[in-house]
Length: 145
Image (cartoon, rainbow, N blue to C red; front, side, top):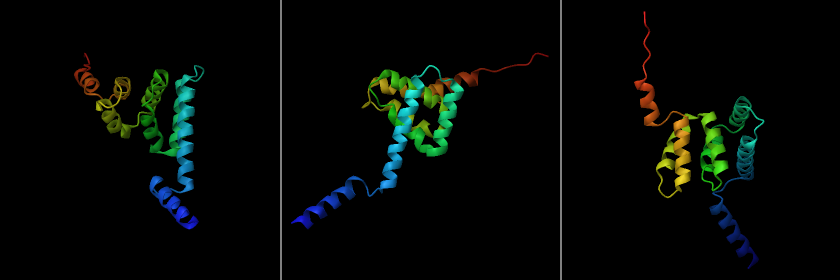
C-alpha cells in the first residue's frame, strides 16, 4: 500500500511540475525574486535612470530574455504603483521581443482595464504603437539653405 501511494505521488509531481529539475525551479525562483527587487528599486527615488538601466542590464546579463518576459507577466497586478514601476522598467529596457506579448495583453479583454492600459502605455513608451510611429513619420525636418 505504501509503494502505491509513493508511486502516485511521483506521477502527480511529474505532471504538475512538467518534469522540471531542482536547478530550473531555483532559477525561476531567483528570477522572480530579482524582478521583485527591481520593482522595489523603481519605487526608490534616490536611484537615477542610468542606475536603473544598469540594474536592468545586469539582470539581462544574468537571465537573458526571461527577465523581460517576467516583467511583462508582472504587469498583471492590482497595485497601480507597482504597475507604474513595471511600465517604467519595461520602457527603460526597451526589449523589442516583448512587443507581441504586450500587444496581446493590451487587447485581452479578460484582463482588467488597468492592466491593458499599462501594457498600452508600455508600448507607447517603447514607440511601438501605430500612433507614435505615424507621428514620427509625419514629422519631417528640412534644411534651409
